[in-house]
Length: 468
Image (tube, rainbow, N blue to C red; front, side, top):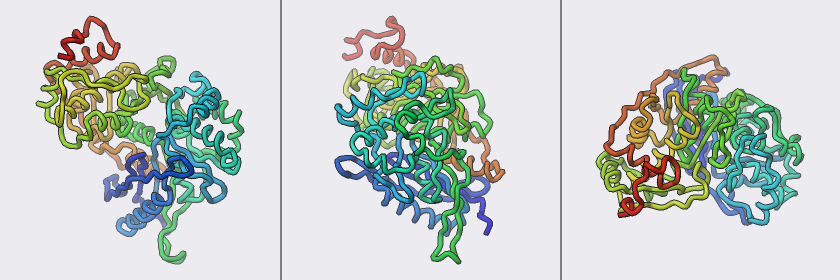
């Protein structure tokens, strides 16, 4: 039986996991969503992989019955790994948002290679997943020694469905401490710890690995081709390149705001500002800066999930209410404790302050990554309706485009599969964002930068006036 050209993509985030089904012409036929469950195991917080796999197989079965799916692909967030042996997981998958005890951190952090080798900054928690491999090795050496493979998160799921263990460069190369992009090889950490033999052979993102059979028995089973997964933000970068964007900056938004600008020289990257070199699906360094913009917006807005009016934005600018970094770990303003300055804001006005905060952090990040080319914005923050338009006002010399899909990582994963089939079904449907021309926004930006000691001091308003 020849598989159909209908493609299912699992877009696996920390907070939400989704299934998108794409027809052969690139349109979305259906969606399904779930929230991964994180549970306690032996004093650690881990993924309930059995529950997630149960949902994935059920969702894929239903999609295949309804839409005759022929291919399945995976994209995943960039901080997670799995230790496996033969056909089993030898330890549950760690939640990357937990910090090793200080005594362990002190012993493992000295093992991390220099930034000049990996272009991965030293980050807290498990944002560098090589750090969490070291943690698990330190506290449970028997687990690491039992493993015959270290799999990146998308490759864990590719393996679960295909039975093949492989590696993929965009995920291993994303701030893991495991990759040396200028050498196009694993880092000294991998070799010094004896992990090289546990790293499976590489396959390109989107490569066919095997089949997952759906049906009551072998004779009536429907084969679904399983494809090698990809790092989610790199998947989004690939998608927009496949649409014809070349010299551009991508602002990929979700729990993280991840900004790629390939025109930025590697020597401009500052490890202390969460700047790094990601690696594209083709193995090329991709200068990047990031912060947890979606998470910070949720915290700063107190969970606001409704539209924000332009009037509310104008009111908080006029009142000079500011949110200052940082509301989550990582990002270009590490070590700063979040706070609000100015009159108290609640409800929609607090959400407007949070939105302005994320816009200003994005604008600052674009300056740091030396973005002067056209900008493409993708992901959840597009749905706020004002994010791109406010950014367009602050960067009038750069055309800013937004994606109608807002799911660039899933579309990029599908595009990688379609490429293996010799198909290019996606058309460029981005729209250029129009500047809002909000009165006082530029002065608000300058005052915000003065408050965080970035920008020219003469642009600052007196602190007493700001707090009045």
